[in-house]
Amino acid sequence: MRILHLSDIHFREPDCLEPATDTDRPYRTVLEQDIVDLCRDGKHVDAILVGGDIAYKAHPDEYKAAQEWLEALAAKCHCPRESIYVVPGNHDVDQKVCQKALAVSNAQEAIVRAPDANRSRVLREQLRDVEVGRSLFLPLEAYNNFAASFNCNVYPSRPYWFDTLELSAGLKLRLFGLTSTLLSGLGKRDDEPGHLYLSPLQTVFEKDRDIVNLVICHHPPHWFVDVTQVDDDVNSRTKLQFFGHEHTQRCTRDPAYTRFKAGAVNPDKRELGWRPGYNLVDLDVIDTGAARTLRVTAHVRQWQNAPEMFIPVKDPLGNNVWVNNMAAPEELHLSASASVAR
Image 1 (tube, rainbow, N blue to C red):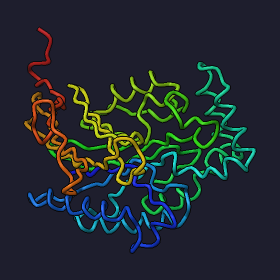
Image 2: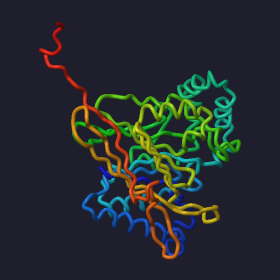
Image 3: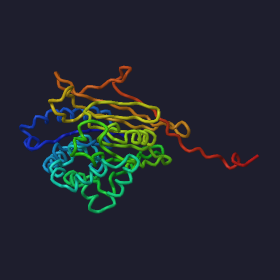
Image 4: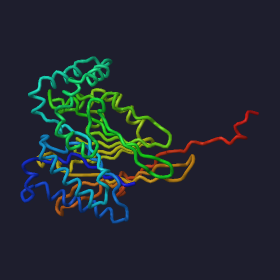
């Protein structure tokens, strides 16, 4: 299985509505060509994961342009449209709604002011209240209208989405798309790590037999006030982790998991160290029984100027691809004779 991981595509109106003068368009074109070139090995893209910040200011026209681009990109790399998955980022939160609707600020502040030990309970109570729960998701209305076309919209009774795909050799891939923006849009909580909140309500990743759990979330764990709980849950319960937001290309290899961060497809050109990036990840199942292994082979790509092209981010040994092998053993069944007590 091949996964394309993008993040922070930042379609900004009115620029994105005028192709002839859209200064981000040349970079996206080179990105498309780079992906197509990497897929000349005979493999096509099976799933596209978009890690948030689809829009820039949550304008409906930004989502229209983003949807058209994602669908065209999927066609070029032969990925089924139904295999495009999205999660919200802080730029997908309509700040005007946050500022105008007192119910939104009241709902967010109740979570912020709650003691650490009670914060999860307070959030659960708010999500179960029809009016309060609706207020928390009101700033995501334009995003949700876009995400619904990919069956990735979120709401109070389902603050995250999940889906299951077939891998091989008896393994299935279960995807979880998290909403990291419930406290975004107010109080400058998006400006530095440690002020947002995810909660255990979104990290219920069951470790079922023959299931490989994958999580995609806009903000990395250290952006949450519950960073320790999030990091522990994600690392112990998921083998594949995809994050965005920080506009940096990273691959972390651990015997139990592989973590990716994607550079922004369309970062702000005023950023220090401005370099667009993305990840192309292959998943292969090796061997069977107790030796069954999930092999992750990743092209971690970033932008280069003069000449304009995407180049590999090399691993610590200087390789162009990153490889990580993680155990995924089958359950061993004792024979009837062996299980008889002696």
